[in-house]
Length: 214
Length: 205
Image (cartoon, rainbow over all chains, first blue to last red; front, side, top):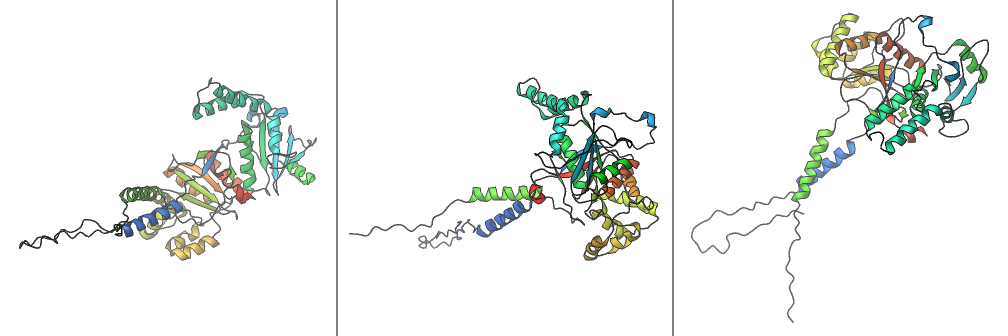
């Protein structure tokens, strides 16, 4: 602790008749100040949160009247439709939605691993692209690609865009699903390196599908 | 045997460096801490693996809470004032100097236009109560006020990015509706605010 030192400066100089100004000690008791400093320090440490919120960028198509012929046609064999519905359930099917010929539907959930995990489904269907992204990571390890997050990201984006045979995912949340489900699904797109995905409205036949699967 | 006298000495320690360090840290934390303004709604964001941080400045924030109410927020006092002026024109409302000043320092706001004046006149406590009762900014196609808010914000601050801060239990129709309104206003790129995966996994269980 900081202490006050009092020095008796002029005790034996009393013989001199001259009066001298008492030498005041320059030491101050710093304890209260230090206490306060630490109090403030504790307060600010406890109240500061360093975790910045993260964001997920999405781009929606321009909302214009698009002629039917101008719409992007997606190959049915590469298209995976994911229907999100209540109680965190996922219904998915491959191919196109055809009212006359209902597609084979499957049920999945948001678990990371397991027989019904949507992630496993996506990884399997998107193996082609996923492997290529892995290849990029390998190249980084072998020094073929510069080890810089921006450069790696760029390469991955190129790979995802270049692969025309990659999976196309249509995410279709119904009115009973929650925002959380949508974000989780978009998250899976990131995890599974699905380059092409979109949030799409449900059609009537798909609403029927959901009803029938339940 | 003479006793050995141990000289009495107060144990003294030079604390100056420690105190210096303590003050340095205090200064650091004081300067880096940004006190969060009182948010009218508490939103439990979903988690994701995305690591893109939210920009510090220039964000138009749309908050959707678990009851499907929509709130609007943008930072910067001057920006807010300009937006309010535009809205006043659109909604044919008048705000006096006091109300304008109040609006410029508030955070998220989610009021139908009829209640805006009252909301800005109210005291802090009344405002808290109103925030609980409010229905948010109307988004229905017949009474679409959110589009005016977004339009005003886009005109005042065209460079600002748009972020949607949704509660994990917000319902999809509202979210879809908000996205649709954004698209109508030619805002096709926006960000969804999430927590980093792992930080929020405990809440999930």
